[in-house]
Image 1: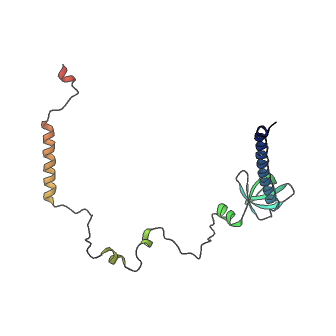
Image 2: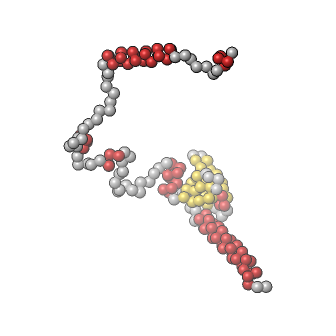
Image 3: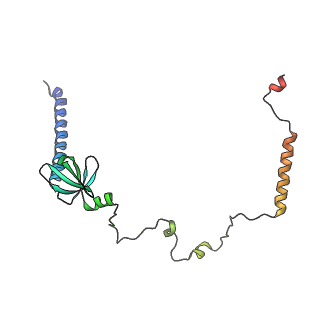
Length: 171
C-alpha cells in the first residue's frame, strides 16, 4: 500500500483522537468542579434550577431550593458551580457594582452640551434667529375664508357629472 492510500485513514484517526481528547478534558474539568463543591455554594443544575448547596456526599448533593425545600441530586446533575456574585445577580437580582469608582454616564444627551455655558446662552448664539414652530391662533376672518373656499370646492364637485363603470351608457 502506498502512503497516498493510507493518508486519509491517518487523518481520520488523528481527528478522532483530538475530538475524544477534548471531550475527555471537559469531563475531567466538570468532575473537578463537582468535587470542589462546598456547602453554601450556589449551583445551577443541568435542568436549569438554581439552588444553594447544603450537604455534599460521595455521589449526591443535598440542595436548598427555597424556604423549607430540600432536594437531593446526583452529582452528575450539577451543571455549574456559580460564584457568589453571579448567583446573587441571577437568583436575587442583586447587581454587584464593579465600577463604583468610575464616572456615572447619563442616559440622556445632556453630557453632549457644553457644561460651562448655561442653556439660555448656548441657545442664543450671535447671528442665529429663533424659529417659532408652535401653531398660532389664526384670526376669525381666515377661518371664514377657509370655510368659504371649502364650500366652493364642494359646489364644484357637485356640478361635475358622476362617472360610472360604463354599464349605464351601454344600455
